[in-house]
Image 1: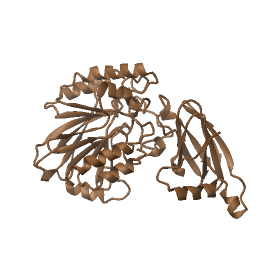
Image 2 (image 1 turned 180 degrees about the vertical axis):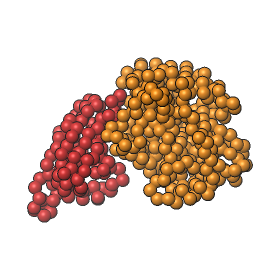
Image 3 (image 1 turned 180 degrees about the horizontal axis):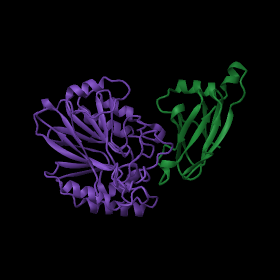
Image 4 (image 1 turned 90 degrees about the vertical axis):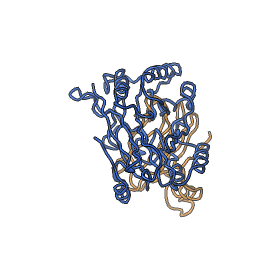
Length: 126
Length: 293
């Protein structure tokens, strides 16, 4: 199944590569220490994310494994500086790491219909 | 409330850090050789919306039309900054709502009415129905010495202006004198007002970058259903109220849900505005007008 990665526009290819290496599996190769990042599956369909509440630990590297069911959706966590397009039928992997504790919203940022404005969720970082 | 902001206020506030909230002047107006005039901005009618946030959903837009028609002196033109209709997945219903909207605003006694789409009008079909009924989604016009630019940041459902339109904007700006008085209309904010609620334009920074060399630029927009004023450098951005339901201040509640209708104060938070360009003083007057029952 195709795998794509989309980072926020404006992030350079080199920086994106560094992020990818640092956050999504590159660390063990470089340093031989850290474990594989935890994979968190999130499914999007009109007009809900499942799950819509996600618990993370500060400093924990994770990979969001994202899928969309019916139409093109977006997955955006503005406070983490990450976003991705979610074409239906594809699995999109987005690495992330919350630096600090708190509650952070995520949302669909591609206008997808009448329920778009409430298509969101919460990441709780402890 | 009538507001008049002089150039010195503008410069003083522009120097404040942290996004001071205010309305601004159209700097450079005093040096203009052209006639004073005013226009009206209406926004976010969401025609077709039904629900408790507005028990008079079919009456509010006609009330605004009647209020504009009752002005002692008609504005030179009216600009409707998007979300003329409320979104629907049904393309036939979308066109029906647009035609109804069209028939209601046909009653406006204003010499010129300019329209532009919001994401509710154009986001699901990349502006196809809008263009069919109303014409281009981005364009320019000139009026009494002011250059007006209408930008489409909604037909791309990702909320981008896009490379082609950015090039078109750059070419248009290159034809204007640097000191040209420029007013930009958009639907979504061009700056990151609150991306957590999608109150932003994905490539808005690139639009602002192209506008920055011009010292006399003001932006009017909609989308956020409330009055809001913000500076990016010397460029002032003014958001208008809605004609269907108000939205809460950014981040003030968990969900981006309409504020509830208050039977004790019907139409609270709804409204439109007059924008007056005064030749003599160099001021831009913004007068917010409520919808009344």
